[in-house]
Length: 307
Image (tube, rainbow, N blue to C red):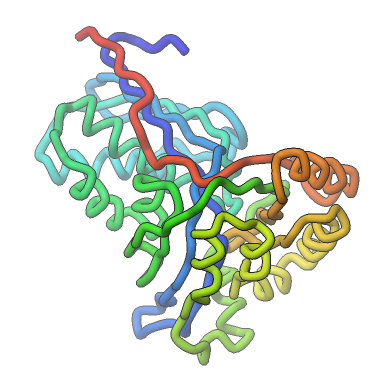
């Protein structure tokens, strides 16, 4: 890809939640979480070029559904970096999307993480990764993970991360839907279903043991999402997606985050492609993708010299 002189291109991954345990909301209305994130090979690229002001353009998957005004998380990330450093330089951000919009896969968070790193490089701000992660936490619970990538345990609101040891890589089939699901609506449905009395969230140790062992058969027994029932209440047809993955021979299938993307675990790439073909034929998804994880977090792909 040819970029203007001085451009910085950063790639950040989308994510799936292998486990998502949700506790009762606190007095501020936030739900404590215990989750395992895995970054997967579906990326957002952000190309930052020098400009007088901040601006944004988008291309790629679901580009027409991405706001380009001040509500965009990547623009908010660039503005936060300006405010934090006192830098007055501007930037034009061009996003090339692969992660579905409103799919529970953290695409907007990946944009924000990539924008933080790209603008830090473009403006020579000199922040280290730890400082960028602290800023990322102010932008949203999933943004820090898009910076760190790989596989991590998230606690608090999902933004307090601990690296998780993983043996090998995993193969996933993603069933992507036409329309997204609102995260606040899913959490509200969770509360209506008794979530206001949910216990403190806790991850099963056996899940972490399975990850360390690199055994997809063992991992399959521990995929879980406390929001799945609430999401199915709002979108009953997602049950058809999970059923199709089961019929296709997936080891297990789980809703990613607040949905509506369903992630199905496969033994290997050949098995994943077989599962994907059957799910595609069932016509329960707009698009069926095969990805692997874990992959690295936000990283600079290229920096074109010049003024």
